[in-house]
Image 1 (tube, rainbow, N blue to C red):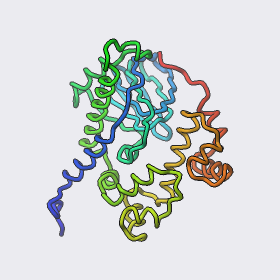
Image 2 (spheres, rainbow, N blue to C red):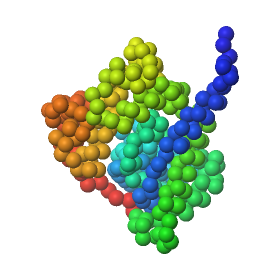
Image 3 (cartoon, rainbow, N blue to C red):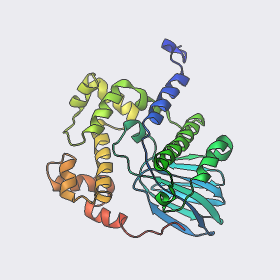
Image 4 (tube, one colour):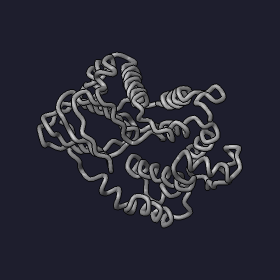
Length: 298
């Protein structure tokens, strides 16, 4: 029977390698930080174009992000690693701090593999020093107007990323990080292939071409990829392209034809079909629905 320290690499080493790689890939710029209050049963919908986090100062609420729904209470921390719609429904009077980052200039696979939403319970007890930093960031919606010294924007961004790093570490230490996530972050063969794929979504990637980047046989790569990612390379490529398409449609207001061209589809119709299969709606209809007015924070 093999033990956990085969070849001198322990489970703790694997966790540490994955965590270091994910934290080292965080290159986010602070966009806004505000303190919000909601009365009991009041609801707040926001669309985050980029990553962000919520910290619950007091009260209780239900948070919905896509298919995920969770109850949170005072001291809980929620990290959204991608830009997604978030719905907050107050169960009691609640006060929270809502921090958002600008959409990253480039996708980093180690970050992209993080779940869309992560919850760290009792973050105030686990990282009390970080809570003080969070509370000091609640500047209101006009964040830039609060910067009075040169470098304030950069310093605040680094503070915010430090807070996120502490939250991801706590999430990992609590055993919330699935083994599959650790494997796909630190496997050098997969890392090379994922880096190449994310760097050039327009390229007509195949299992064979990705396997060559990974320096593996086709069958060996396909098997390892599915074990780590939970889906085939083709399915993963489609999902990544659709995420990129959503960014282009909303953040850059690109036309459907332009999005199709930039993501390597031979025709607008082919892209629209792929988008509809993946999202459940045509690109134009989806953009109209997402762009509908949402309630803003108080």
